Length: 229
Image (cartoon, rainbow, N blue to C red; front, side, top):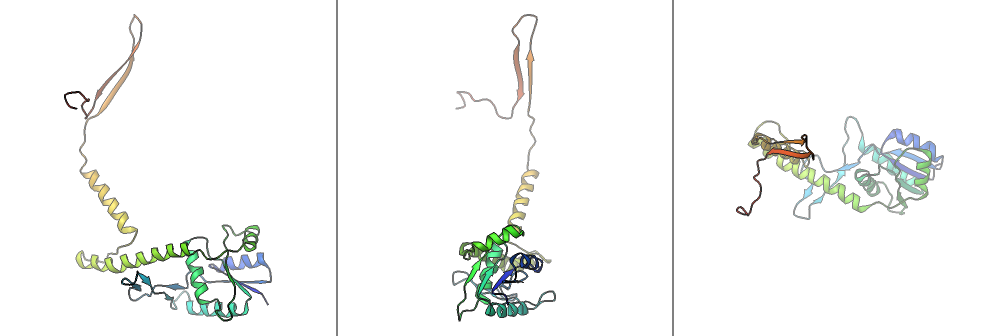
């Protein structure tokens, strides 16, 4: 029986990584996030420092998430150590944090580690397992801030848009700001007033030297002079 449990995001990665690590490691997949804000309700306590409330993602047609969590818990109980190897980004860090909360046994307490690699090669995977880390709380907080902002903007502003403008409209943390930038730029283009501006430069010479450079220009800004400044 494998001594160690490794949890990655993708089932395809799990199969490949399992071959690289050998029989002492059992590699399973979380298939992405196992926890999220509730699908119904805000899930963010605005009055308490915007504290989020997460829950295990319910069973859906394409993924039986409660079953996945149950299987991971069972495997974690049998393992001597748990290695959390989600993708090396803030989403992956949050997945590892939620896995640590939900599947790592508290009694008896078992060691768990964060493992990261940027390529799925035998060398990269084996090197990563030689130097496991702890979960980066700063990255977890960054993901949580993004998720809370998404929920606050989408959950609060989208219904307001539907009521005031009509139709099925949505607001988003990124899309609403991007839309404003597009609108402001379009207004600048519409209000732009064309002005004539040109420059003619030439190198002139005659029968007698020397040659000289000449320039004729039409500028919208008059030259500075002592009477004006």
